[in-house]
Amino acid sequence: MTDINKLAAAVGQQLQVHGAWLSTAESCTGGMVAAALTDIAGSSAWFAYGLVSYSNAAKQRLLGVSEQTLAEHGAVSEAVVRQMAAGAQALAKADWSIAISGIAGPGGGSVTKPVGTVWFALAGPQQFSEAFCCYFSGDRAAVRQQAVRECLTRLLARLQQPLMV
Image 1: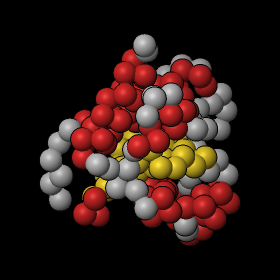
Image 2 (image 1 turned 90 degrees about the vertical axis):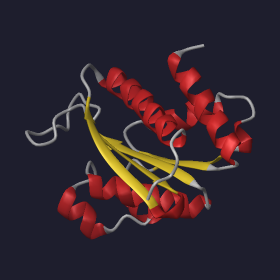
Image 3 (image 1 turned 30 degrees about the vertical axis):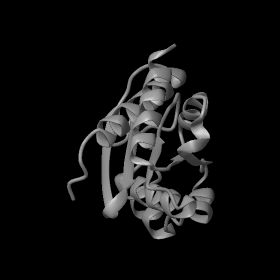
Image 4 (image 1 turned 180 degrees about the vertical axis):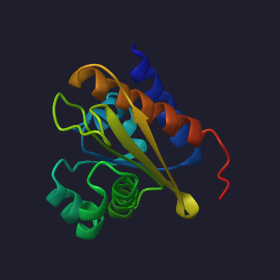
């Protein structure tokens, strides 16, 4: 069992303990988080939806990300992942959601958003919301794997804490 499998199983256990549902909204990881979660037997008891919204149009249509937010901040930004997470949570009627948008490379980076920049957002009960950014190194596959691992690690840590909002 890989570390990602272990993390996904632990996330599932925490969701089951709380009787909670999870949805995902992924861009640069292309469904890899949803795949890791659904690799766990019994995940249908706590995993509701997995959306891959790779294009800006998909982010707008599926998740309700505003055109203005995309224009002002770009797809790889705190503002966009927060809207993605809120949209996934609402669409699935889930207790929790996580969103990811980043630049996996090899191209597409800039001075302000280099390759390896990945934004994450969590949305939870009681209008809980948090976002964070990580900078990963390596090739496209490595950046994506690190993003999945970080996503599951942060989600697990959050699920293990009492909700303080």
